[in-house]
Image (cartoon, rainbow, N blue to C red; front, side):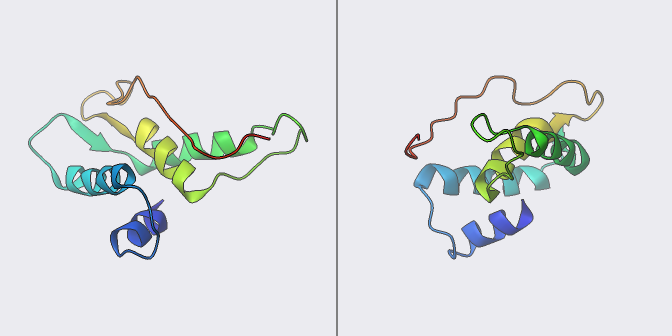
Length: 102
C-alpha cells in the first residue's frame, strides 16, 4: 500500500480526483492526534492477505489484489478506534469500479 500512495502523490500513477483526494486524506489522517482513530497496518495487512487467498470464481485460483485494491481494503480494515480495535472507522463502503466485467 505505501508504494501505491507514494506513486499517486508524486504523480507517477494517474488516478481520478476522488482517488487523489482519498490518498491525500489518508496521509493527513495519519498525522492527526486530535481524534479517536488510528491506523493499524497489521490489521490492514491481515485483511489484504485474507482477500488474496480467496479463489477467483471462474478459475478457483487465488488472485492477487491490485495496488489500488490493497489501498481500499487496507483503508477499510486498518482504521480503528484508539481504545478498541474492534471498532472500525469505516463500516459502510460503496465501491464503484469502471472496469469491464468478463
